Length: 342
Image (tube, rainbow, N blue to C red):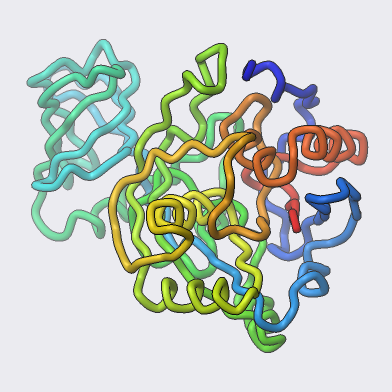
């Protein structure tokens, strides 16, 4: 399958640069995955499409303030470090800019010495393995010195860092937000639960592979980056009961979808309480084992996320919906509008 099949024209002014004042005030495009029919609504209309017994599965990963600006101890040159993955023992896989200044042995200081690091090795993909040195609690220091690692297509500063977190974010570890959940407020989730919809949570720590373009010419040749996930016992029980009783399981975001499908696919359509690393790649031709519906944002052309959405709703339906979204001037990407596929 040619990657070019998932391309579409996207005017740059439709890329949302900041969140709306109210989380729930975004628009909602509703796509019927069987007929391809489209509805144009507001996000607050989501509740109309949910029925008692539905299960809404959300990713409770919390974004780390993973972008650090420091200085080399020998020359004072500025270095930007982006944390990607904890390797334990204060060692992290990172991306650094400019990379040529960060050779093994290089030492960098952040926040007048509150935090220091040493570069240990260069990875195959050009990243750096670094070890941090500090007194106190690492994550408290990171909260003090770090900033949000906004996606490369967002060029404006974010005034309120919490707007790049979901209201239910709990488990620290993501390098990017699971953005479909940014539309919810706590009162709106309470409203949905009061209707008889069950809310369940998984954790998947989003890596920067999310933003990496597909460099292969053919879809099947693309290699996904592995991301850490956890499914708690309560969520496994809620989802398994719903599937056994023929009720719908709707994922909030592609990260929740990939977590559910990773475990469901390996266990004949059932969830088990488990954790691990997933590099599942969902594209047209994939048979879903858990998912019945998906709430998601609008994604980059030729991205693995457009391919995932196309696997659920059909490539022609999705590309037509995206074309309509462009014509209707929906806001795209992390701070953009939402799409519901049922």
